[in-house]
Length: 101
Image 1 (tube, rainbow, N blue to C red):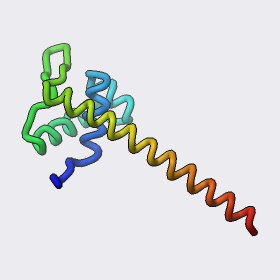
Image 2 (image 1 turned 120 degrees about the vertical axis):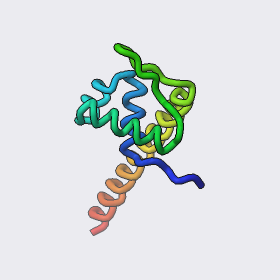
Image 3 (image 1 turned 90 degrees about the vertical axis):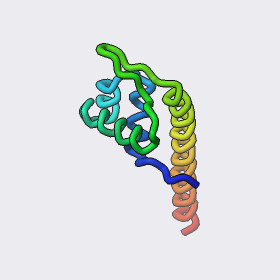
Image 4 (image 1 turned 45 degrees about the horizontal axis):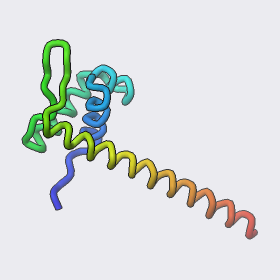
């Protein structure tokens, strides 16, 4: 199994890819656009592929970026479901334990 890139870099990429904006991604993740840019560069360096085309007033996904974005969105959605199920299960178990006392 390949070593995964840093989760923060993947999260920054997913947000920037959805918004096509480092500024909006930074707002969403409560960091500066520069921090988003650094995370994207780290991810690009780690993967050895460009994920965005940076134009003067426009940010576009490359073909590789489009593929990764689709998979990243799916992965984060699945993680959200897993966290929700785990949290719900923990609450249910906790309330059952209390009512058994």
